[in-house]
Image 1 (cartoon, one colour):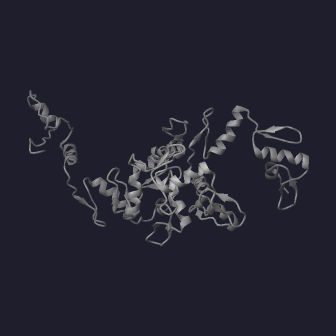
Image 2 (image 1 turned 90 degrees about the vertical axis):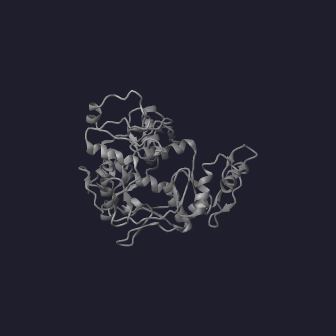
Length: 379
């Protein structure tokens, strides 16, 4: 170490047999171990030796256990199985995280709004809602996103390919998790950020990312003083002051602040739904609806009621639920003045005045004013 005294390692038994050192040497390890095997295992921390090499991809590891876990990427072996849903994982840690879906355990809490999460990464993504941070920027149109997966979904608008391909069947996926339990392909990202070590497949993407670490923001708004890293975000912000909506739908004439919003709107006319769920096949026009839908499959319910603790998979459902506690009834009947806490309840109520029955049995034609009555109905 720096040309001085070499690091020495001793078991607790050896230390006990020696006289105590009166002048402690800062270069001698004071850690004690129960056995020589444990000591040898610890010594590898201080060396760069990686003697365990993968025969399939040549990647090397310090520990045999790390190599064993790594090999499962190639073999598809997932020995850790959930006893509730039979889903399998390569590591015990991954299984433990998954089980939180079943137990409802959510140890990570947002200090701003109280929303709780089962994974720390989900909390980090959620916090960007409060901070407004959108570190993932589209290279095509400049639109920024708080989540990398949202950027990937957005890139489909520009004709981007699904980057993850199964090398067994050739099917492509937007997210690499959809490849499991099949073998994953290696996505090469040769350009790395020197600050956070994040990898990128293109130098331009790295350059844009590095601006996020810099405190210098070149584009300043003269009206409100807000600063931006890139001209695209700055240009979009300026329209919030001017009210300019330069992007016009040629079908209905509706105007928008940005091109991406126009493209999203145009799908109403074309019927295009580019965001498709790989698990059930359902398709969506917007990435927001797609991500809300995915929570049905993942079981994630990040929105908790502060009164009773009940969890929901989207903010809208939480808001509707909270009216039960607050007594708020924002939906009023214009005919009789009666109020309701949900729009659907008002819709059903209005049928009393109109005589219209929206819910009809496909077998016998009987009509009902409430969907629950239709479900109970038998021909």
